Image (cartoon, rainbow, N blue to C red; front, side, top):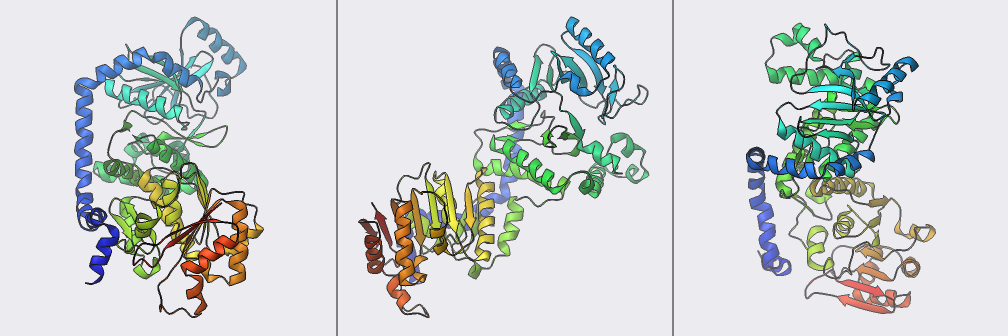
Length: 539
């Protein structure tokens, strides 16, 4: 009970209330967020349908040239890359001179091509009698201005037309692997996008025995008596059964990286499936297609956006047999971490925490109590953290604007924990962080060529070295930075095996070491009653 007033004093009333909110309020709110997210999405669609669609249609009509200019910078395939024989290619070019676009083939429900120009190598072809009409929109492969495009006819579905235009335009600007816009017809609701040379993943899985195509599912006795959801799940299982024979783990990782890039652009894909993944012929990289279900949420609160992102990731995990992080997976992993395994407590946001975040001695509490207010401007800074532990401080530095953090850590179990901490923060913040571990004794920094740093930190770590090593290390640090942050530990009688460590952890000792070894300007931050004051050296 005596600790409660101390904790409240150090955290402050406002921050203590926030921590209480994290412990007791957020876990309840998280449970109802999916319901709110679903309602929000329905409301957004209704508003779009009622009055936003016409306004957005007018906007894109006025900016049609902008759409096409962005498309010119994106992925494109020329008609001679289709592999048509020379005579057919010549005839196709002649026809293209007289028409804006020439239909090369129609694409059916299973992605088979009904060719109007004979043999097309490396694509699944079908006869007219076996052609299976598409359920929603018609697709045609067309020749347009020497390029190959896919023309989608949206019929009367204006919303799907607008969703796909916005997604492909903005994701193209962001450098995502998506088709480029080649042409737009606002009157007839048709969009022509670049044809992606390569193989559709669904077809590659079907070739290896997976029952995935609609025609194969309809003819299979194993599927006939199943309800729609069970039928769909069985198709996914069929794909997973042979997935490893079609693509390798590196491809799956690259595909998830594309999904993550889409999320960082504030889009939710909403259509993860094998038929929407193309293995590009030139590079072998994954491309995603069909964005009529994609939704853009630039102003949506981070909590709700995480729920929607998780839905995409859950579908990815289901299809590709992965365990990419979601709130549910993170929660289970945190449950497996014992409190005594966490030296630096972590609060990830979203009510997710690891260790006791009330404490101000390390991790989350230390950052808010003493660190973040006593560091210089961090924007664009390159920082070295000696004794990085589970990377919590390094990630906070990056979240506060630092451009790069390198952390020295010798203990492999803390590095593993730090990799998890980084991954969860990247999930939480919907961005990547430039943090890198070096697994080595911090003294080895003297033999490494790492360049210069704006800040070097050693928090509750340097005093475990011997006196000579401390002096040499600080002297070396003075050659690679002008700003050095040390944290001491003035707590006594805590069972140290070497009594001299108490001296080396004191403010007086660290102040003297810093001054003698290249940092003449010093400052001490020592709040009353706090056992882990800072010694800051500068030039």
